[in-house]
Image 1 (cartoon, rainbow over the protein chains, first blue to last red):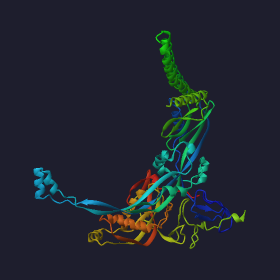
Image 2 (tube, chains in turn purple, orange; image 1 turned 60 degrees about the vertical axis):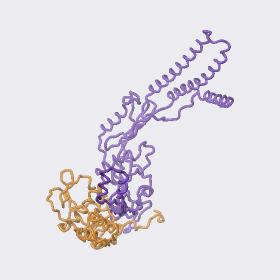
Image 3 (cartoon, chains in turn blue, brown; image 1 turned 90 degrees about the vertical axis):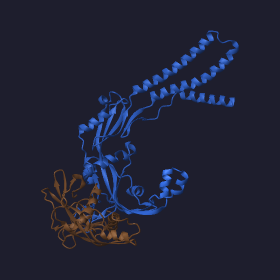
Image 4 (cartoon, each protein chain N blue to C red; image 1 turned 180 degrees about the vertical axis):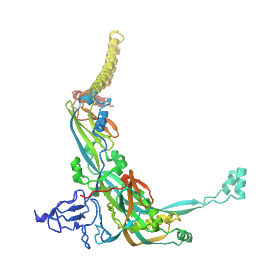
Length: 379
Length: 210
């Protein structure tokens, strides 16, 4: 931020507030105007909020409709907080120029001779091989003058906890940039929370803007100008049951940028029941088959030990599968899922760690038993 | 107040004309300030360098509010030498560029104004000057790279006549002026006062003073 220390008025010696949004500052004591010449000053532009409250509400309610979220979310979600924030982005513009050389091979064309024509007419490959020697190329160097403007947009604050990336809003900001207005930080603060520029500009410039060099020459950065562009967003915090969640809507077009919505638990319940039902069906059918085979006397004493082996092998296959199925059902029941909405689409995420499954100790024991058996058998 | 924490104040440059004492004119984000009395502009990061302030006369009739949009006008001598006679002949036949005009303000649509450079350079003799009192759009751009930008502009122009491979070139600046081109607010946009071209409203950013 500009002006880390206290500035002194050269005219009256009074303390002058460090510049926040404008290079032009005034001494409060003698009313003299000054230009702040520090390199740490950045001009600020802000995109104006264009969508009305009802349009923001519509966007949020639209995100509440979906197969993954509870059907009664739009009815039961209680709005706790609704505030505006300005997210800063560095917009770097400049001029880059230079002369680039490139070399190409120019093929020299010569008119066909009588022998060429004869070779063409006869179709004799031997004759054609003797005549077609036209690849006398020469290296040609061509120069291209480049004098062009460049522009880059990078987030100036960490977006980690916002669940979207600067790439997601880049086009949106660039499309509306001509509507951006120069603002003073004091004006912006009056309209909402202004996020700090937590990413240092010099690091961004070092990584993002540089001289382009190639074998044919270099394009040097002749000029670089950095501006901070603020994107207005609305952050709405809701409560649904015991769950708190927030929705972030950008206010230039009403697009939902991020939301962590509650997950429809009935889906988890149905998925868990489905897994248990399928696993139960398999196990039941297998037990019925074995019981039927033994009770019908189809297996004599000699074959019984062989059947026992098969039974053990099948149990070793179906046992872990059954446990895995019950474990999956447990995960579906107990994992606190949420539906994350980003500009790229919706994804299912676990909001917290899943509580340890009671099947896990049995699973571990089974795993050890299978590994032990495998070692004994030399598998 | 703790005196040790006070910074030295070369960071604060007075916005007052040392000749006439008038307050220099410029908006909140300006880096270039004007003295309308003494007719000069100064890029505040090189405060000892003054540039003549010139207002150009509109060539189109317009009724909307007028403002001046700042450009750096560069007069200079471009020299090019080539051992290739074909190249030299082609360059000799090219219509020489006039004064070069470069945008001195910030715009999200920089490429549009780059096109004006050639347009003004080709029709430079038709640009008349006048005395102006209307407001100026804030100027921000450093004039330091104008020499190299001028050389590359000339080279790009001549490259269309004949490839510039192997040529030696230089651009010697003779004078730089800060020129206000008149623009008019018409309907939902801006009308450029020289050619009459219409621009969307956001192409020019106007600012308020703090």
